[in-house]
Structure formats: structure tokens, C-alpha cells
Image 1 (cartoon, helix red, strand yellow):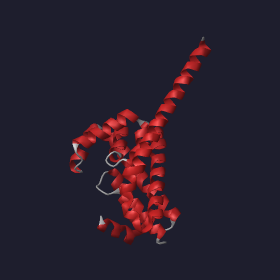
Image 2: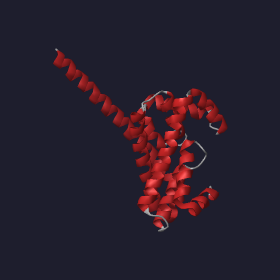
Image 3: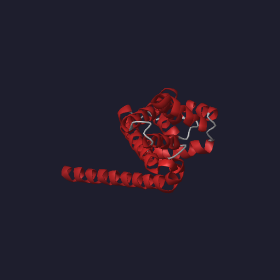
Image 4: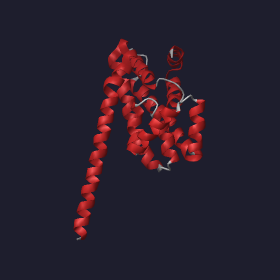
Length: 203
């Protein structure tokens, strides 16, 4: 981890882009901690806030898009081979798959906030032949929110940026999951009401 942070400090925006892209794709980088460190560098005046945010967003979006393309072209065969090479346990794959199947496209949005899930949801989306516009809408909006939350957290924590995982596990992950469930319920309820109204009009 220390070597990764030194690399980011040395190569600045390019280092951030590469590290986040590879991290989202599945390499064992602590992505939230990495973005919080970027926020800390902004706090210290070593990086520009807007440039840093854009690079973090583009890097994470590039990683998730590549995962989607791999899932779309290679399908479920990739998941076995991919997980073996990156030492992702079968249990974690099953957890991610259950989360994706349960929440569908919302898993792309909320999955960023759950370690072990964000690395696989894009591949599941690709292998399930989710259309690219739907994938892009949920994956990129999730990347935008995830980036700004953890970058701002690193900025406001300042010298205590390294404690970001504590805040993430205690507050951010539960909050995002609750919001996701409420969104799913609200959209489902709205769709049900729409179908009822349409049915009544046909009568």
C-alpha cells in the first residue's frame, strides 16, 4: 500500500488513473483508501480538486467499462479464470452474484461502495447481456457518487485520511444499501401504479 501511495505521489494524475482503473478491474488495491489519499493531497494543495475528481472518475469508469466488455465477450468462463488469478474466493463470487441478481442494475450503482462486489458487478452485467446504455447510466453515476464521497471524506479528514475505512464500514455502506433498497421499492411501486392506471384506462 505504501509503495502504491508513493507511486501516486510521484506520477500524480496519471498514477491515480492507472491505479484506480486496475483496482476497479480487480487488482488488490484498496480503492476507497486510494481515493481518500487523493482527497488528502488536495487538502495539502498538491493536487487540484477538479482535476483530481475528473481523473478519479474517468479512471474508475475505465476500469468498470473494461470489466463490462470482458463479461460481454467472454461471459461466465472469464469469472472462474478471473477469480482464480486474482485470488477472489468462490464465496465472494457467490455473494457478488447474489447481490447482482437481487438488485440488478442498482447493484452497479451501489456495488462501488462494497469491497469485493464492485470488482465483479460489471462482469456480471456484461455476461448477462445488459445493454450498454443501461449499464452506463447506473455504472457511471455510481462512479461519480463513489468518487466524490471518498475524495471529500479524505479532504475533510485531512491528516486522519487513513481512517476512511472505519467511516465506510460504519456509516457509508449501510446508508448506501438502505437508500438502494428504498429506490428499488419506490421504482417498483411506481411501476405497479402505472400498470394499474393503464389497466383501468383499457377498461
